[in-house]
Image (tube, rainbow, N blue to C red; front, side):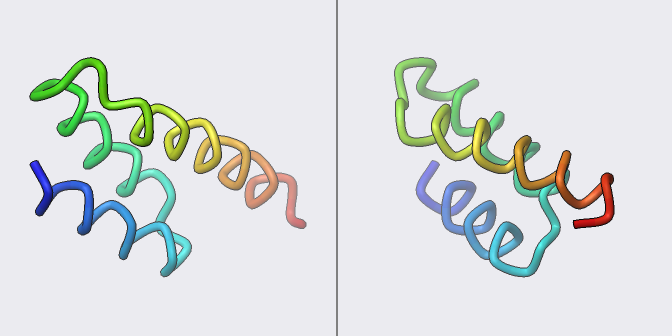
Length: 55
């Protein structure tokens, strides 16, 4: 689980938000109560939206 979380974080920092979300979702499959992953997904979704808007 930690590997998925760390990979997601790395992808997020590289601006690869969609890929990062997929890895955080894998964390949630293992531990549905992992709040930090839920928070990170929300943040990544916002960044992805901004990216799509061209900001």
